Amino acid sequence: MRLKTPIQDFLVDHARVNPISFHMPGHKGSALYKRYGFNEFLEHYMDCDITEIIGADNLFQTEGILQEAQDNYAELYDSKKSYLLINGTSGGIIAAILASVPKGKKLIMARNCHKSVFNALTLTDIQPLYAYPGLIREYGISGAIPPEEIEALLKNNLDAEAVILPSPNYYGICSDIEAIAEIVHRYDKVLIVDQAHGAHLKMFSRFGVQGLPKSAEESGADIVINSIHKTLASYTQSAVLNINTDRVSPYVIEDKLQCIESTSPSYLLMASLDINAAILKAHGHELMREWADHLQYFYEEAKKIECLEFIGKVPGMDWTKINFSLGKLGISGDELETMLLKYHIFIELYTGDLVMCMTGIGNSRADIETLLNALREISEDHKNNLLTEKAGIKLENGPTQLLTYKKSRLYEIPKNKIRVPLLEAEGLICASSVIPYPPGIPLVCPGEKFEKETLHYLKALRENKEKVIGVNALGEVVVGAE
Ligand SMILES: Cc1ncc(COP(=O)(O)O)c(C=O)c1O
Image (tube, rainbow, N blue to C red):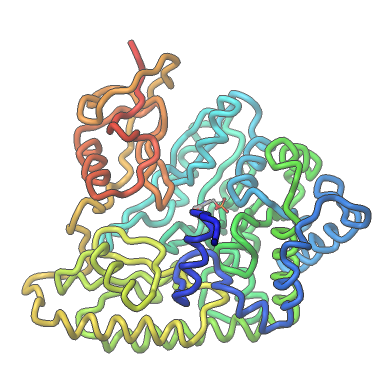
């Protein structure tokens, strides 16, 4: 009798349906590894799960095979030094912040940073100074961080130590890192870019495929952290941190990486990073070209689908993230997600009417064809529902309407904490971040006041069974006790 294994059963059942992945990770299954001859690694998967045996090098004192793989990354990204990470970009972000900002000092950060940035703050009482992203009104999503915001914060806080922001953000919107780097360096500070969603940007330009925004490495950022797993070909949780200038000491970064990473780094994760680098070095041009062609084809064909709206190849947009909507036909994002499941298409996320499909290095032309066919059929089946008045993508269906990040006063983070029901938290100070997942960006941070509108939004998210970290099963949040 087969043993009951809830996780394994789920994974195997999922693999059996031949899912079409438009979510992370970027490898999209074993086909890519097989295409480039890594069958033996896949077959010997279990036996390759080793520890630091003789000859296997050591992640925290790299001198052998791991150093070789790190050197390959330094070559691919033209960085001064690259580090393999086994705790994702999350780990790299925390290490980079701890290495750049002493205990209790100030960090200028985008308000829409990932929660790992907020986690770093709490470790050594770092004081945040928020830069707010613009709003792309037409689509209702967060936009770029204006360089002027960064400049104003630096001007008024000469004692800030570093600046961190995500680029691209979850939806693919990139900030002008070149302009921001120029400003940050004029004030002699360190610029850290969370490029979790843009590990591929440098690969497009490295291999001469035009059309994507410039990578942070090429734009002058000091430290850049890339989730190789999200868009390229390594396993989930593997990432790479690049040091690009002399402003940061590699020794301090190494010390902080040791503090926060597991002392039992997985050789499977590190081997997948190694394989990704090898595939890119040998076949980077071919793969980036194919990927760009698939996308070009998608956008051309998508234009012909009635009532399908999408964020196209606008400047500053990483259009490998396909954001589209059939809101004109009265179809909300969660409804569209369910409809796409019938075609075994799994999306990354939806926000209101907007669905985001995250493409990766492993997506094939067949994946794109299936997505286009599904959208054609759904559009055809619902064409009678055409809403008479609807201009542009709207985010008004359901609770996933995105709230913008409001500039709000920061209060002292409460030392004494209690839990209260959501709707009783109005006017109280948040003591533990509230984070809708995805995208994993805190909606309310410790030290911010809970507002009525936000609380109702959170209640609606929970009623819609969306994951919200920081709101427990009883619907309570943590606030400061008097
Ligand atoms: C903007 C952003 N930064 C950082 C991370 C963390 O990356 P990782 O999953 O590699 O730890 C994420 C994860 O989704 C993210 O969305």
